[in-house]
Image 1 (tube, helix red, strand yellow):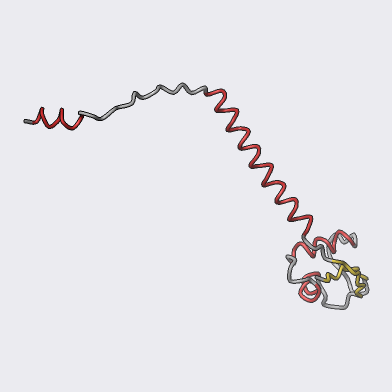
Image 2 (cartoon, helix red, strand yellow):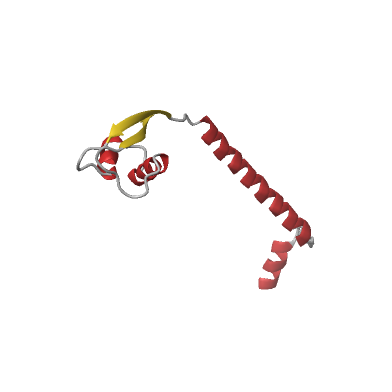
Length: 116
């Protein structure tokens, strides 16, 4: 009985032979590398385009006469824009004014005031 069911189930059904696929790994590797390179190129173009179209802030210089008790940190609290890290701002002021260590009362510090 089981044999008859089995045979009746397969009667009339055409089974296709599976075709063996031969994979050329060298070609596959080259194609994957090309796809990866294209994806990286597109990503790079997107990043560069974004950076190029972003509005750049304008800078006006402000001269400040250092008073007793002033430090670069207190100046950063007052003059550093919110969009900039205070440490980065202090480093820029030090570099622009050739400050090696401390500022002293009477020194003139030129700072870039950012207009966003």
